[in-house]
Length: 183
Image (tube, rainbow, N blue to C red; front, side):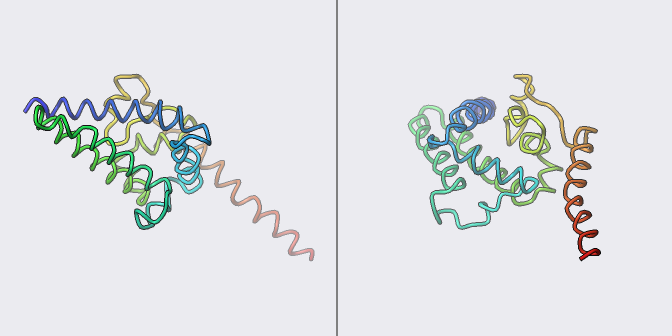
């Protein structure tokens, strides 16, 4: 049974390491398999205040960010399978955490308000000024351990960013009104 907490810590550390060094590190290279994360998922999440419409599509519709994410999780689950006879609780925990990761991550990007309430650290990762922090998705444990947990949601920094975005969106409308009146 000790395999359960070990598996939980292991997968949380894995989330942190893979997110930082693979999805962001290798993923910034447009020719990398992992580029989907930075060049598709982050772009869509940032443009749409956490919403990533790829999660509304059927899972195996194409080779998009969602499908690649699932393929990587399945490959990782398969890679851990040989450990099951020796460490069944650890391996089962790893598998459950892979499933939870996908389910939670998908919901966060389909229901942004839910994410703000239940995964603010993940919203901080996508919408905060520095997208190179807050690496954990399911729980911020390893971000605290590694000193990379920085709050953004609910801070004055977020409030000023929201106001700046609101002003930017309303500026074109305000500029168009005088032109329409003189036309």
